[in-house]
Amino acid sequence: MQGPNLVDAVLDGRYRLVKQLTRGGMGEIYAAEHVDTRRRFAVKILREPWSRDHVTRERFRLEARATSKIVHPHIVEMIDFGVTDTGVCYLVMELLYGEDLQATIRREVRLPLRRSAKILVQICKALAAAHSHGIVHRDLKPGNCFRIGFQGVEDFIKLVDFGIAKKLEDELDSSNGPLTAAGTVLGTIFYMPPEQATGGRIDHRVDVYAAGAVFYQLVTGHLPFRGRSPDETFRLILIDDPKPARVIAPELDLPDAFDAIIRKALAKRPESRFESMDELAAAIAALGGIDDARRASASMIASQPAPETPTRRTWPWLAALARPFRRRP
Image (cartoon, one colour):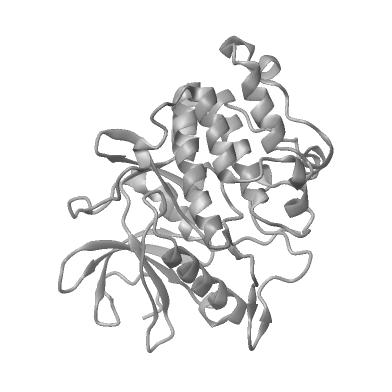
């Protein structure tokens, strides 16, 4: 069953794989249908030889465990996890229709301050829910923030891909030791704080930093740190400050409070950042003049969209899910 394409295969007698949507380095994503209810899902499958690698399988299981613990309107719903008799590891998640923020940025370059603020407040609330369970995302970026239309809200956000999430209490498998060796760097460099980029000890404030970086990019159309090479980007993260908005995008005439929020969120030392996602969300909401900041999260998604095969606009999120984690030297 672990061939190049599993279309029409049925996993554990329940999930029929309807269409392969994308194929990544270690995983594949399929649109699937429950054989009895006919409800559509997204199914993430760990491919050979990764499905036989203990650490990768454990990370896959950790993703299922992490996501399933958090019930929040702005976090993708994890439905099921299993390993078939033939060793195929799979995750079943709600199938989202829309596009990720990376696709939005690629098309629109940057978004108005108020719109960006509304998006970030939702992201912050989702991460606050994860942090309340002791779970740090560690790879927040536009590609992991999915925009769907819901109850008239065009920018209703779903946070996806907890493939390298870290459980703060411990990341140990009781019988097989740690899943992450000391000094291992996981994540996406443009959104990494110094402690994460250097393989140091991390906590929930790496997500605070990443949220600040995403906010900066959405509003200005620029990454806070981007060198001509990975080494130069790494150096900028460690020693430089993000350019003020009046320098990088003077035509936007952004308030000084925007730069103040960015400086605090992207502080080099974790203790100098916002202490929590709720604190960051409050600052961003005030800046954006959002008196209805909680409205986007007021109700849970009660029903799925009408079953249909997702369009190509769904693929960027699925492509991200197909890469459970990354290692960088």
